[in-house]
Image 1 (cartoon, one colour):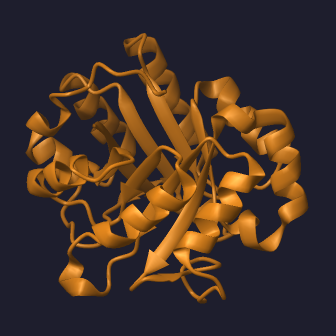
Image 2 (tube, helix red, strand yellow):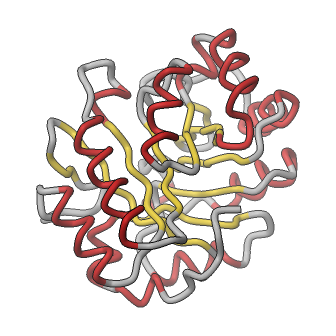
Length: 237
């Protein structure tokens, strides 16, 4: 089971995910702390770029450069506003291994085709789900298809992996492993899961779900419980 500490960056500062508070606002300092704990995996999400309200590429590039210099087995996933080949190439040149695409899956299928043609092995397709319903754009509107239908389409397009973003809201905030199972069974692709994974117990539960190969966990939780990084020898894959 891969554990990817996740940093959500907005206006140059770190913002906590749902259910997490009190994180150091300096993403560079948090990244340095993760390195001190032996972390060589990371997920960086540019909140501003995802909302088309600017970007944090300079800070993200500095974090990636620091990780790539510190460890030879670095595995970094970048998400938020990747809507062109130039943006994708920029992050790959900085050392990213995986590129997360979400909104363009629904709004710009021609861009998806272009990205797949050049970067297929690096792409991760996101399925954002709240209460069992796929969210089509920025978590603000429901799609007209099921998670299984989304997974089927992603598999048919030729993606190599899926991120199931389990948006907190229903089920008392507990991880929706039922939907994760449905996505995994339908797509038969390696699955990452994030959004509601907040404890060692959740990670243990995720490891029992066939198909889930990694989880995204808020950096604050990882720094509070660095034992979550104990299994960290696998490459990106």
